[in-house]
Length: 105
Length: 501
Image (cartoon, rainbow over all chains, first blue to last red; front, side, top):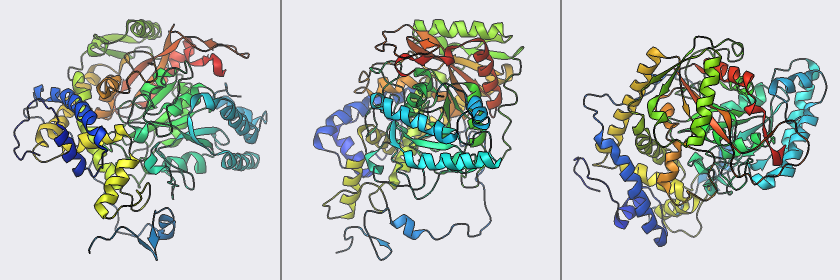
């Protein structure tokens, strides 16, 4: 990823870019998909590049269609403990905890 | 029974012409007989449906039934249903049995007493315009099974158009209710953002997603949308505002109603055969007293590029939760946590979902955020302002729903950009947050592969064309009123595809 905030030029993504983005998105891609993805994503970014022609000087970015603010609620317990129900659908659990491969050697 | 309206079904149940069990069994039978050709359901919940029907019959007998009690409905498989597989048409959630109900599931089934026939097929995580990205295979268009039904709510529309369900829920992030409704000849409505709860509806792009219905008529849609709508404390973007009466004003006259035709929606790109049907529909509305004028939504040509920044950005964030740890697909034989994430997501998501996650990750990444995401949110504001200006002078905006009739299966699957351009007329309403709907306004005589069998009063031929109506915030009742008035003087909505009549 570049570290400048300049407006990027008409975009074309290389297979290297795809590998980097896939890593950031935590996606393992088979080697034979990387080329087609590079081409397809380049085409999509070309479509998206039309946005750079829009005059948005002084425009406030849209935050919410109804200009609504995040609602607050009273700080009260409303949920019951449903750990068993949630863990019943987990791939691997043991004594109430979710299991994953060893993180620290 | 599968040609009756919601109102007629409700009256039939009360007059004891049929029980909810008989009605439910009839639709389950039709699903069994016809869905092999359509693939519109991922899960059929027969046993549960019959139990719900019996409970509805008991409620009807007790006299505490509501208008919708005992009427069957199909749920898009994006809504969480307690104890029932909720897959979002993804391998990622193939094993997911939801531990809770979406708010609309609670409202429609537990409160209103509707019967759930099953869970409808869709594009994977609602990403697609043809229902070809489903892990469970493509859905076929009942009007021509060699063509797509549209997407992402392709299973919902195919099921209702073929008479396998009287009505179905659907969701719309960039046109996923309206475009499939158009391609299958149905009435579909996406309400104002925040009108229907998103709690328990698997998130794609949270600032755009909105639930609604696909039905055979505006009147049917009004009854079910009424029961789905309303404030929900469990959805932080739900609007605290009473629900309007969507049914009471259906018969109001539309004399003097001001309808604007955005010139950008009638520019090059609209198929001449579809244009002809839409222009005829405009004449019909004029005949009912509507006042037609041309307007401009100058920024609408930028809605597709805006959407393909905002929606993937939100999707990449929403879909980060699928990590193979707490639920969903988990890859085998991995040694590290990072491998577990990467392999589970690499295996669990299909190509279109992966493309959108990567686009979203890319446009949000360091150095690109201002140029893409921030710029898109600014253009989104311009699109919103276009509508605000338009609604100063007109009551409703009218245009086509899609550029053409349903296209052949497989014709656009290798070209994401061509697929994205299907939603050129529908995306703006999501970006602005306004309500919009599609209704059938005629048929183009296409090469229909279906041959008629069995008796039916009105047999459709050709492929349906959709007319889109867009209204100001919370104008659902007005949209439905106009659609209903149109359907009082036309019979396009009453036609059924021959092979499924």
